[in-house]
Image (cartoon, rainbow, N blue to C red; front, top):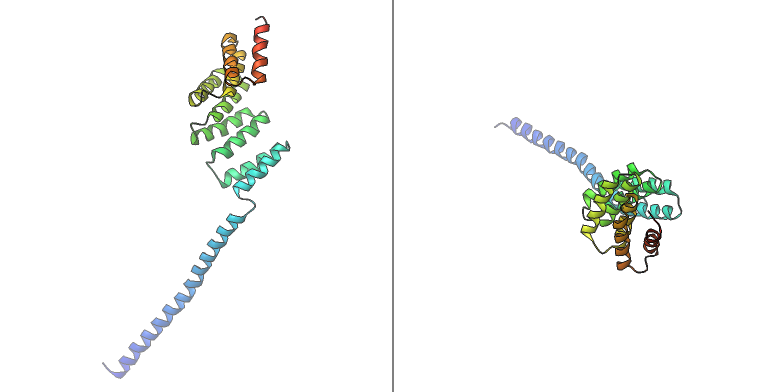
Length: 202
């Protein structure tokens, strides 16, 4: 190999190395920026006032203040940030039910129930929404499901009694109120409804 060829080979190797160095200087800052951005995003998420838990807390405060619209807006934002959270879905449904939007409430309750199938309170709430809509058979089905999960909840028996009164099944309703009182002798509402049925002629 001639001296000229050796020089050309050396020059080619040098330029190749310089190009490699240049590419590295282009890539590394980007990679560092990506890592930095990821860390900033994680840090922002960790300390953001818009964290789902913070949003739920603020929604609870708004609900206590009877500001249902604000509570609902906060919970919907929390749901967007933390989807498939049965507690958030349940609270959205509950607020919608308080504003008499039972159809929309049912949608959220059912989504929550798909995630948390053995939640007796969800079954109770769904039954309540169905009862408000006059869909007594569906309400009865969910109250029965709630009792299958926990047959020691006096509130479920009370709710069942109320439904049976609406359905004109008064003897069965008496039995439900009596069961509620057996489980909780201080349950004044159940006692009142039972006495009402005993004293009235139907």
